[in-house]
Image (cartoon, rainbow, N blue to C red; front, side, top):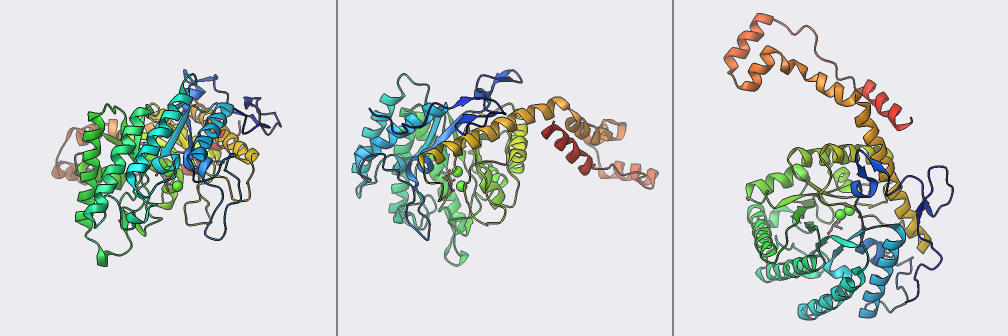
Length: 437
Ligand code: XLS
Ligand code: CA
Ligand code: CA
C-alpha cells in the first residue's frame, strides 16, 4: 500500500531548541516523570471525526481540505482509505489510541441493516490493521445527533420509534467498541436538551435518557464490556439547553438514577468554558466525586461563544489540567484530541503540525504540573489555609457537633481577630515562577 502522507516523516522528539516543525519539542514518550513514562501519563487519542472526516466545511462555505485520501467519498473504498490514512497518521506521531462515532467509520445507509453490515466490514478491516501495531481504541460512541430523525433528541425524543433507533445504534456501537477493545463508551447528548420548555416534558425526557443508559449498561456488561461508560457534559450547542450541562449536573443525574457506579466523566476543555467554568474546575468536580475518567483535549476561543474545538496551545490550562490528573492518580481513559484544524490550515502538513502542537502543549503541561507538585508551595499553602480545622474547635466541628455548642464558642470569642488571607496574587506568582523556570 502506498503512503498517504508521503512527504511526512515519523515525528521524533528533538528537544526544546529544535526548530524543525515536524519534531516534538517537549513530548518525549520514554521520559519518566513522577515514576511513569510520559506516554503512559498522556494516552493521546486521535478523533476519527475531526482528523479523518472534517474537511473545513462551515456554515458559510464548503470543504477547504482534501480528505478523500485517493478514494471517492461516500464509498466503502473511502471508508477504508480513511482507515489507512488514520493508521499511518497515528503511527507517524506515535499515537496509540483512537476514538470514533459509528457514522465516522462508514457512510450511513438509508436502512440501518445496511449501515450495520458496513460497520461489520470496516471494523474487520480496522482489527486487521491493529494487528502488529500498538494502536488501540480509547472509546466508541453512537452519533445520535446528525441524522434528522434525532432532531428532537435520541434518549429524550418524543417518538418511541426514534427511541428504538437510538437503542439500536447504542447496541451496535457498544458491540463495535467491545470488538475493537475500547477502554470506554461515551454518551454525548448533543440533542438531549430543548429549544423551548413550551413543548418539553423535562422530567419524562430525563427519565428516558436514564432508561437508555441503564439498558446500555446491562447490554454492555452482558457482552463483556468492562470499561467505563462516560457522560461528556456540554451546556449548549446544538441545543439551547443540554441536560448534561456540566460535570456537577451530570454527576447529580447519574446519582439520582443509580448509574454512578458504571459511569465517569469525559471532560472536554471547550465544553467547560462554554458552561462558564475553567477546564480545571470541571476536572476537579469530577475528581472529587471519583468520576474523572477521560479527557477531550482541545480549547475554545475567549472571544467566541461557541465550540471551536481548537488544538490546545494554552500551556497554563494544560498544566492545571495535568495537575488535576496527577493528583487524581491518572486517567483510566485518555486524552482525545477532539480538535480540528482551522479552516485555512488545509494541508496534510497542517494536520501534523496541529497534533505536534497539542501533544507538546500537554507534554509541557505535564512537566510543569509535576514541577508544581514537587515545588510544594501551592499544596502547602492550601494545607495551611485550612489548618484551623486541626485545632480543638476545628476537630470538634469535624467530629460532629451542634449549632448551640459552636454559637457558645463564637460568643466567647466575640469577634474573629484576623481572617485568613487567600493570597491569590502570591500563588499566581508561584505558578509563574514554576512556568518560566
Ligand atoms: C461535540 C462533542 C462530540 C463528542 C462525541 O461537541 O465534543 O464530538 O465528543 O460525540
Ligand atoms: Ca468531545
Ligand atoms: Ca467540542
